[in-house]
Figure 1 (cartoon, rainbow, N blue to C red):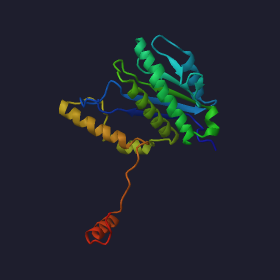
Figure 2 (figure 1 turned 135 degrees about the horizontal axis):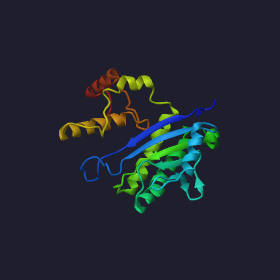
Figure 3 (figure 1 turned 180 degrees about the vertical axis):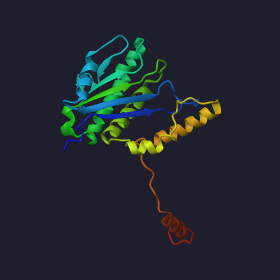
Figure 4 (figure 1 turned 45 degrees about the vertical axis):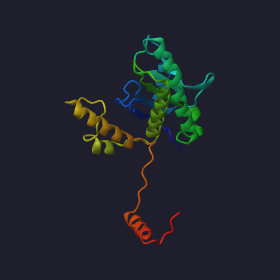
Length: 228
């Protein structure tokens, strides 16, 4: 049975602190909205329309690993922020394109997207590049990470409706309106921690049995375990 047997939806956001520690790097934040599905689905139709319906400031482009090497599954990118100048266009057609392409191919390599299905799957990726983006390495890396997150969530059919219903009220949005700067800073920090915990690429902490840990500590204190 096919893994990608219907239209699937995913999203991913990646943001960290500015290198100088001045706060969140809002200039280079990466946010991906993603639609994927098999041949004959609405995802294929959306792919074709996105690639051919070019408008001023809104462009569709193929994700390529390198010139003359488009990725599989077929992937089209579209910008969520109007492209206004050559610098922004190059950021979309350069680092963002490379990041998205590498994420797609790694998801085939690791089996998230089965190789035997890759030639008949279509992916549409919405890319956010702020007009003030100033670090191409972050644009590439963060869009790579956000795209990989979105694909893995989509294929896993996550999150489930029951899970969202259970947590949506206490879930924090890093860019939500707040009443004061102090509240805003605190909300930022909590929202980012929550966001990281929902990232399917983040390794889950190893659960250590409390009794086993206590026993090991006791043995060490009694000198029953040799120390290097």
